[in-house]
Image (cartoon, rainbow, N blue to C red; front, side, top):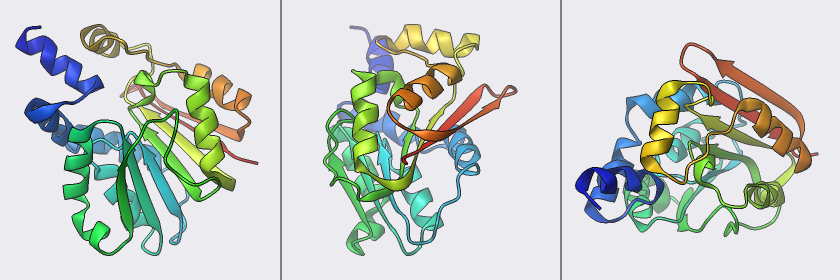
Length: 209
């Protein structure tokens, strides 16, 4: 595998020094724009307990901790490189017992049943195996009335997103209607779909009854 292919593979499974570089880049302005846009569609309470599935570099964990100053946050990622970077990024909150960064995957979340008010998945469902099982896990950990937010940079119609999917491999770009249908089948209600045609960003939010 040449260096370029290794670089693209690290978007799906960040490893080692190169993986840490990729994960740190996830905390940059481009990804921040998507997160801020998506979270603007969700009302967070100051004491909400939140979960970021596939937390990457940890910027969205920190972002939600600021929005929930009396709440807690858990970041879950299966890649050691991501856990290392996200832990460093949220070190102060971890010392204050407001945050945990833990290893795990979307199919089997290391989180107690009905302990979370808001679960998020930013740019990660592309890679989820057994997608419906992962949604069932998110449903399990949410408290009644809690919300799951899925946000992607690509709506499945932009050429750039399709190019990245080919480069990275083993990556599926869901369209908003597909996500809405999957959430409904998983038991979520009051499903909202938000789409920015200028940027191709999509955000789908479902509520646990």
